[in-house]
Image (cartoon, rainbow, N blue to C red):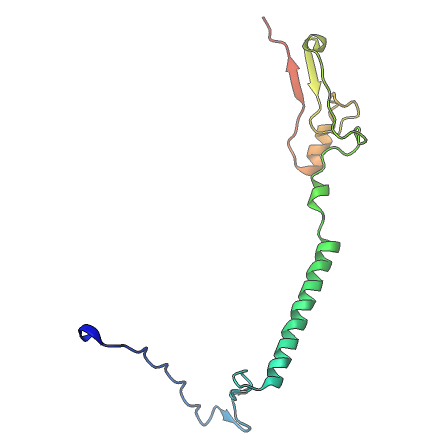
Length: 147
């Protein structure tokens, strides 16, 4: 060892206190639990290991099947929940409306909730939509500046 450095070893692990006579039960049990190394999985008993591996594999497989069944049957698809347009021009890949500013007149009120029967114009359907969903959507109002 160089420079007088001493090699330190880790302190020994404390041993568990011996079981008292009143806690010991017949058959080598303490407090109703077996203290044998084999029961704790510390021996090289391959039969016990195989049983543990089989049990863990079975539990993992059962959990996986349960999770997949949950996702398939009980979870609602978030993509379908997020669809805004339920019935307007569903055959088109994108709904687009264009207007000339001169054609708008003094004021135009456009639907933003996609529930209007007069879409793209607002008919007040957002009120029912807001009551049902807790949303706060309203119309888009475009008006000319007053001179």
